[in-house]
Image (cartoon, rainbow, N blue to C red):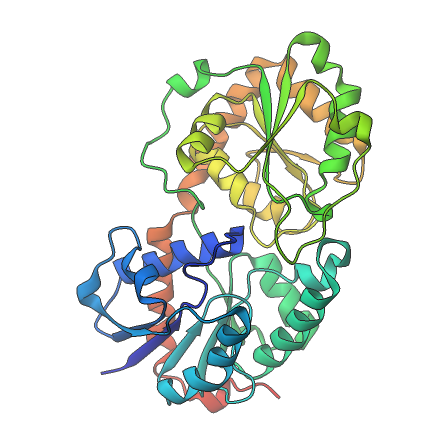
Length: 374
């Protein structure tokens, strides 16, 4: 029986980024859609068992304990490859073994942001990720990303053949148990939402400038910013007058249930990020009936399609005009909500899990030497 080993060192991390959330949800979808392969998950046993509704009969586990950050990297580089042998090895967080690479090593690259958005990450984080990611890509059997934009970037940066890469659209980061309802249209309140870590490439500084110039404060609207600066990431410089605006609320982290309610009742999501690998908040907003303003750069036009107002992320007037349009035109909001509802089914974890196993079945009849990178 063909074997698949999954490196789940990200489970149990105290600092959950969008990448952690995506990896966790993708792991769940792989388990829930498992086929007749012997699957083994390597990670902290308690964190594996804590996965929501896991089908534990379909996989084995290897407990890695609770190593330090350095210990996790050493396990990934040295112990994991020995335990896996010639089986398929899935690495879900941008890096993988490059000292002892597996013949059938599959690497998920969420984005190339640490290399493209230097102001958003600490120097140590950038240098390590560039070094480890670059070598892991060159020594991997196959690469998966969550948008065609990222796949194309990887192909060009590392001179890969298109057959060495696959794009699998993911689902929302939130576990959304409800379906779109017409009631979402009437639940709207006078606030806009920003969701994401407080990093420069998320573009919050320009959002605050655009908010100030929109004049919506005088009309009773507020802006709710969800997220915090994260470990290993660089913060951003924001004009103190803009940050202290009484119509702007910095809520930090909120629970998933609170965030879902905020999406449902918001007049719109403002997400003009400069660089993304997928854009989880866009899909979450689609699912929960929240009109979307997003960037015309990176993967975001690919993900949003015609279901969002696309803006130039470098232009404060462009962002401000879109905010004003959503606030002043109820029909624009309704149209975007319906377009988002129609687009949302493209992005489901069930589809992602099934697509992953179809890829494994295809790769299972391919000789690894055909895909080894030089």
